[in-house]
Each structure stands twice: as C-alpha cells, then as structure tokens.
Amino acid sequence: MLLVVTYSREARQTLRTMCGTYDETVVRRFGRAALFAETELGAFLALRLRAKHAGDVQVERTSPWNEFRDAPERVRNAADAYESRASASTPYAKFRAGTGHPETDAMRDAEL
Image 1: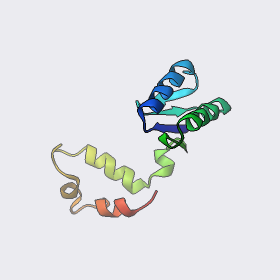
Image 2: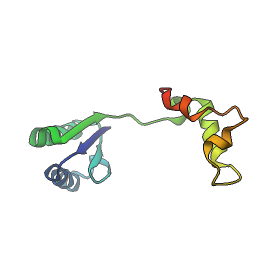
Image 3: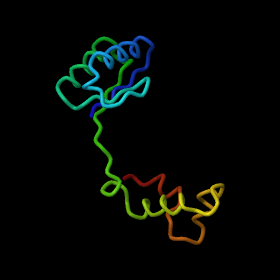
C-alpha cells in the first residue's frame, strides 16, 4: 500500500477530493493521511499530490504487518499476559518484575 501524508490545508483538501472521487483506490482514510492501493492508479494519485503540493505531501510504501511473522514470540506473549493482568492499573514495569517478560527499554531499542 501507499501511505500518503499531507502537511498543509491545501494538500489535505486535494486529498479529500481524491478520496471522494477515487474511493475504490482508497484503502483507508485518516484525516491528514490515506492509504492507497498499491496500483498504478494509487501511484498516479500520490504522484499528482506530490506534483501539486511538493514538500507538503509525503509518500511511503507500506506492507501489511503480520504479528506472527514480524513480532518475536516473547513480545507477543508479554502483550497477551499484560492485557490479561488482574489489575488494569498495574504499570508494565511493575507487572513484568520477576517474570521473563522483556523490559520496556530493551524493547524500545530492539528493531523488529
């Protein structure tokens, strides 16, 4: 997919117009941003936005995230365990004490 992010009022207006006109190409809309299908039409629309608004438009290629392929098992297990905790107000640092779950700082510095 193509992620299109707009940074000016004019670029956002053009994006809204495009999304309304080419809704079959728009996968999802987020106000200032939209995901376009990775098709020639999606590329054409993204390039039109860049040509019209230059630096006020950022385009990135994205790919769907598969949590089972892309996230380590220890991170998935920690997330599941934390969301199943007995008290919803327990912070993660306190929850993970004495367990094998990864530390927040270690996860922050580790790339997927």
